Amino acid sequence: MIKSKEIQFAGELLLLNNRRSIYWPVKQMLIFSDLHLGKSAHFRQNGIAVPREFIQKDLNTLKELILNYDTKVITIVGDFFHAGINSDTELFTQWIQDFPDLQWNIVKGNHDKSVNNNHTELPFQISDSLSIGPITFVHHPEEGQNFTISGHIHPGVKLRASYGKALKIACFLVSENQIILPAFSRFTGLDTGFLKKSDEKYTPYVALDEGVIRV
Image (cartoon, rainbow, N blue to C red; front, top):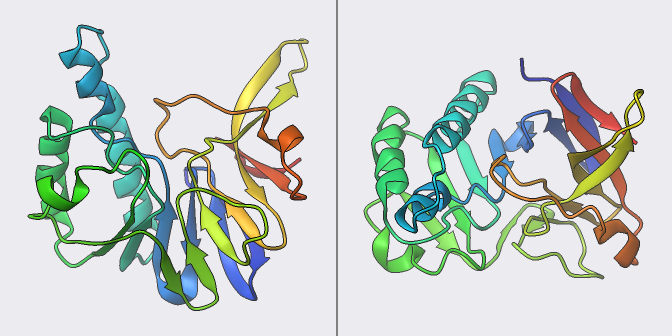
């Protein structure tokens, strides 16, 4: 079940959800980062046995989010793709046919090198950064930026479970001026050391099945 947490950012109501994305109600916009479409197929092409179920589960989650909210616009804050065209990207090309009326914005990330020439048949608006209202979307967070939503870091925190084991959990990082999104795909690593290195005062919101919790 999708569960949301309301926050105020740049004077706007945003909904952080436990599926590692944000819904902006007034814009009817779903925002996420770091799907890394094609990563599992890229690994398989290089002899590493990675199940195709990873991308199928991510696309099922994305469909669930689109239908749960009244989504008209998708904004991807970088690293939507991982490598060139492969069986995973072909699967997405078929999957997207179910949503012919959606507007898709892609902010290019460091993995999106092929997005201009290899994916022009898909209905994407592609840019290096994107400003909508008071919020600017960029892939890589930079200190001192005002009202930006970014990705790239794959932020996470370590929490101590009741039985003593430390768990690494994906999280949103929220400050007065910036939001860093968790990686949408679960087939990614987590950076649990970013908070210690950053001068920005972030509040983590962990994304759990039970909901989004401020820690």
